[in-house]
Length: 172
Image (cartoon, rainbow, N blue to C red; front, side):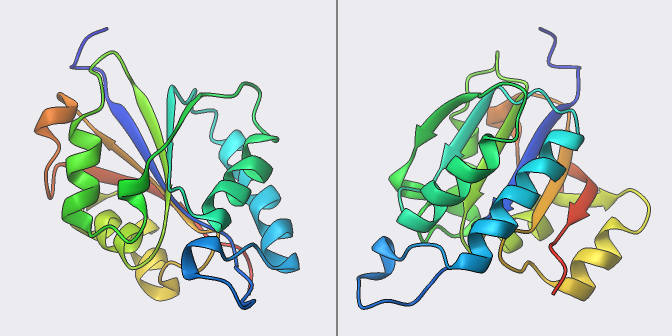
């Protein structure tokens, strides 16, 4: 595989969580979150990106979001439940992505705000069409995702290195 081929990163925020009397890490999805996670999975499948790797926070709501979304995919990518994604800053998320093996073409990261939105904004040196305007207008609500592309090695991923190709968020 050539590092000249564009790589894809999809940043996916967990779906709407419930607020029961549990720790933040153990919060489950709300009923609406379950519906939105499945819809986001269908939309992600529609991108036709053949994901090689999914990096998912260890929080209950991200694991549930991933389980519902991946059910809509034609094939399940290798999944790593990564505790460093929970409550991570954009810089910490870049550090996790920098560790991705270079034979990996496309990564789906399932995480939390404000880190996921911040990372989408920081990585996006440019954008196609109205993707940046839509993301700026909507923010990064639960179950939203951004599709980014960049060239080079994973170790070289840095702020401004990617193009925001698409953005999707469930209807409010």
